[in-house]
Length: 631
Image 1 (spheres, rainbow, N blue to C red):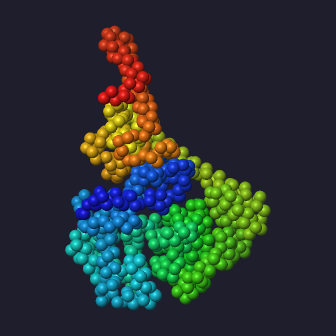
Image 2 (image 1 turned 60 degrees about the horizontal axis):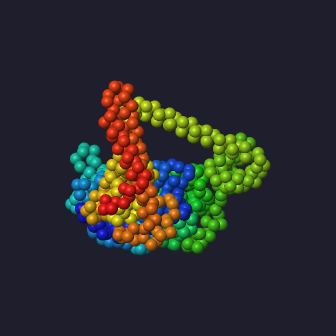
Image 3 (image 1 turned 90 degrees about the vertical axis):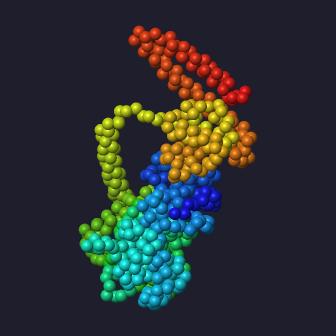
């Protein structure tokens, strides 16, 4: 396995904008020198997730997760560190060493991704070069797909053979085990080996939104083959309910328009892209899910549900509305003319006419529900009308933003020809019902967690480590920010035992070790290879939520001359930390003296020790220890 040079990693780090990367997952707002948003790693209503663009790090003060841009992508996409580097290198155009076979130390996910990449190249090459792929090339030509589109979406061809991919992959050292775990081969019933899942099919690779192949969709080329599509099964790296087909290719266009068109099929996405309508994604053959809407919400504010005119398409659009509203997005629905799908419409009429049709025929969800209820005859009886009204009001209750909710309620009142004051208590009742249900679930979870913790044998044991106090966090931050010069200045005046046992002391110890070996690399503390407690503490102390000092812009990394403001801050923190540790020790010895007196044991030795501690306290208070060893 090729090892990525440290110089290449640092080049990628220097070119990647962490705000752009994190912004694809989190809606960020500038606050002071940082950016803040709702943490993607845990559920929260008040933003506690901070990104520091100057240092290139993130930290959530709610759940404690933190690190650099590689850590972030690794966590979000369940990637190994090398995989995260490669994803980001593609983003900024840094050429890394050619990837070879994953070594023995590769993770299972890394090996599955390798198998998927290999298969994608295999299928794409077969489409271009295999004479047997002529039927696939003819189909693409008939559908009007250009070579550029085929290349852009990585479309391929699976040979009409039981195990050609299997043989080719294993010859190139891609293990059968990982081909199976990637969903590319199926074990024979007699357990005598494997056979290819895809045979004589047009292949559509499915990419994650960062461009990693996670699965495939295979379309028939013979009309008598069944089913029409074979999709990858759920795997460790592919969850159908979380992936949107085309999002990798469409996210920039969606972000630019703040609008996403949601269609049903792979060919719809490719055809619309080719025509120039690029803010489009598909749900990959599954019912729309909350995770998929969450993925869209990173880029868009509006979702247009473009559904076929059949009943299945209508039901899919209706199901999607509430999910979209719950995520705080604005749903619209557009029904295409009978007999048309997005591919056929744009091929016949062009992109401008297609977008004009969407603009002129979009309906908000109230209009959409009423139009289809009338068409289906559900408004022909009083009870039917009441059912439709409830459906609309329950959807309105899902809108979190009170201003949006009020606007939709007034619109519903007009459409239903009812006073809004009559509807408002009903909506409020639905909202209270949801909140009460949430509270009950939360209380049950809390009670369960409490019982579980009390039954744990370790529940009453004292903690082996303690939380770092603010003073030592400040010292650690100063050492991380200023590097060797500050490490030397502080650690010639402090002892490692002054730092709290656990991550705080471990981080200080690692700083001293790097200083001693003349290899200070600030970003090494944020690597996924760093023990998690140290990484989380480092990212926390480096994510400074305060404004920098006036002299901050004048600072240079690793310069011998230290900033006066930094020295002043360090002195104050060192003095506080030493006094804090001394007071703890004084209290322990004082209690030992009292116990000795109560037990009739001679306390004089302990009293001598206590007096020495008091004398040392005077030195700390005077600040004499701050003069350093040479003074």
